[in-house]
Length: 273
Image (cartoon, rainbow, N blue to C red; front, side, top):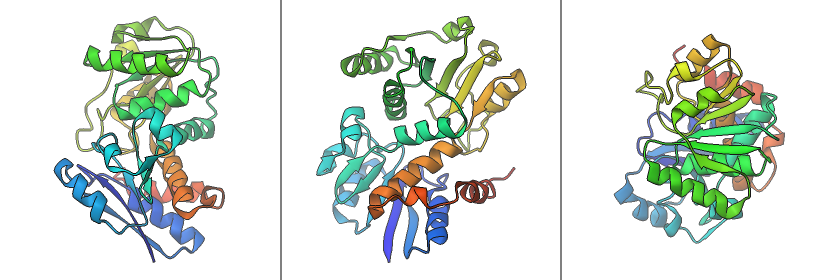
């Protein structure tokens, strides 16, 4: 039996085992998936002692794990964040998951103006996806200006797409169809009442995308729906990045053989709706 896992701190909120066990069930694969609570000071020991066939990486280890790996895939190297590991090699499947989620929801990025809230590892992955989709512009909103500036500098080093740091109030000036992507943990279980941006800055022409999938619909997205904005939750991105990870671990296009609607249903059944 092949053994897989997801590591993070905290890790209780993760539904990765549910996702992957449904993949294995559909395809009749002899494999297991667990979640393992690993603190930062335990990361080095885990990397060198685990006997897993592959594992996912979540907050807060996506960047800290890099020096402990033997090599990196191209996107992980450029992004500087890893969420999937196989045979000592780190990959980033978050950006692919984001693009597939937008595709599933009929949102085309080409020529769009986009705002990213946050400046950590998730924000880098999303920025990389936007760069690879020929968006018109990227704006960064973040609590600490230094981190926002660092993300802007990084994007400028790998692309010619116009990018800048903005205040939250800037979003209210966008009258054209405009994507706002939350790449912070604000609103994630258990602190579900938090929102990354005040709702009086949002209007019906905005497309709100949340990278959080637990809860299924964040308070921010619920409020966006009430305003009339198009909203996309993190569930489809979560599913897509997981399928891409499975493709890497099994060395074949598992993602093309599964019923995504069944996976969605199984995952939704694990929420207290």
